[in-house]
Length: 292
Image (tube, rainbow, N blue to C red; front, side, top):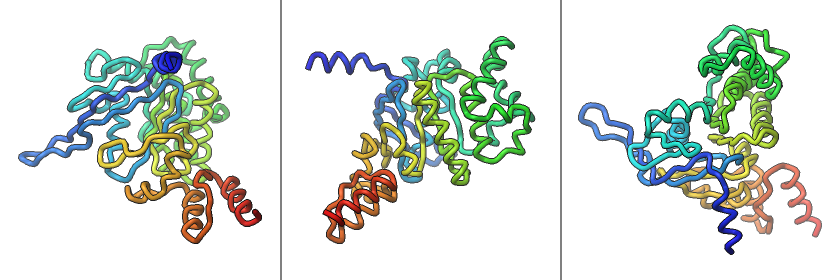
């Protein structure tokens, strides 16, 4: 037991949310809107966490607390040990934690891909030779090096989003927070971005927090956090969370299609495990049930 406690205390946290309260101010004499009253959440360094929930549950609001775009009304948010409410920490927090938003056009600021990726490091005061190296490495990591001299506006949505991610990578953050990064993309673009995100986490050890409403995307993470009514309603591995189909339905959410299919078949008399997160696993589970 002592060894287990020691192991847990040695885990470093990229983000620690403690008793977070956040209220959007009211206009004129109207009352404010409370999003969080007392939210606690920890994200370990090097982990891949997906945050899901119905519209209005506070996903994007929470994400913006992770790099001090928004500040707590009460409670604390610590990013790599830095208190986000301390003004001097704002720039160091934004250097350590990069944000990628829904619409890549909102993050692309230059007319040439490599110039756009260089924008962040230049603003951090990085020396020119180091910027060249960072830009090349970042573009290679997202599979866009061959497009370094292209005009961003001529690229597909998925390519633009990968350029936006490269711009964040070039700033060398420890953590990347992605707020619905595939919401405006076609299926191919979604696959490209998700492959990039997964590789950054697994190959580079970058902490990834993915805000999404696509449960199949969330299933790629190591951990899924479900927000409901300003609170953490479920928290665990994708299998642990998505197998609780009835609880998900009660929050106005659905599990991945494969889990939903197995759940529907169970209502018809089957006895299928609700941990099939991809098509192959689902097909095998149904085949085994029919042939046993």
